[in-house]
Length: 375
Image 1 (cartoon, one colour):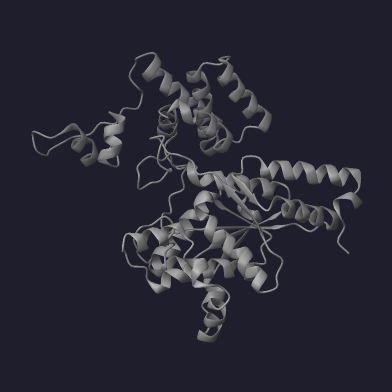
Image 2: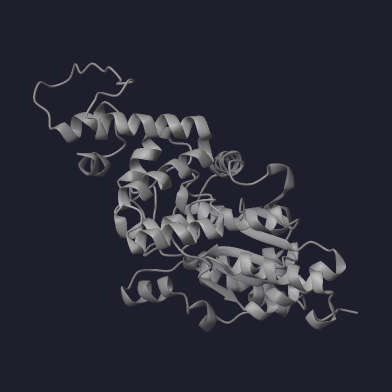
């Protein structure tokens, strides 16, 4: 028989409250919070770990700080003994998630899916303990569905519900087509939670509709409904758009420490509090104190940003690399000295060329927009 919170021992109640506060801190929304508490009560009273699902969008395999907002929350569950379910959407990846798109997305090949999945998992090891991760490929069960199964699945949701997606509504308003196969993406994502029997699913706020499909279909298949935890989206270096490689406003976790440090220092001051809370592994009290010091003027924004930059580099490259990156930054930008590792390149092209074009053609910067920002 399932125990209530009141029936737990004092130490168990304290542990429930501790974990509840931990998981809700920094989250944009928990749907619904009372069910999260109930699941923690059940887990702690029975000694049964919760199963925490994260579905991966394989269309862009390079992991940046925007991705780590969800990964850091996932690590908190992992550190408290819960089971992390990383779902590789190798089957759904061929459809492409239409979320946030005003047009249909390009379908991935089998080779692209496998390459991107491998790249993702290697990078995730910088945040999660790979030894404590369950890796699932949804082709294992989705490929086995016959037409009768698909019709049964489709019959468990209405077209009106699917049309609630903002991006679908926008495309209809703009008279842009929606292919039938795009409707199946949220259906299959919801069915994944049925198969995995996930207790909790994490996602960004832009995944609100998709992750709620897990609750919808678990209920239709008479399963216990998962709790949804939505994490805020992290704005990129421009301070406006969601961090994205396609927007050239990202900080990749595999970037050179000096680049990572320098990019962090270029952040608008208005984003510092958000990055401190969402992109660092500082203890909660440290985060609160740093933000308070910023607000009261006890710490200069430049010094706080340097601590932020050093912390981010340390998380993905280690303490020595973080110290070296900070030293390099101070040498160039505070002491007006030349860096110790200036790359030498030769240009044998046209005699007259715009500086922005030159930087990109020499592959010193990845795009013209990045070159404009750096200049």
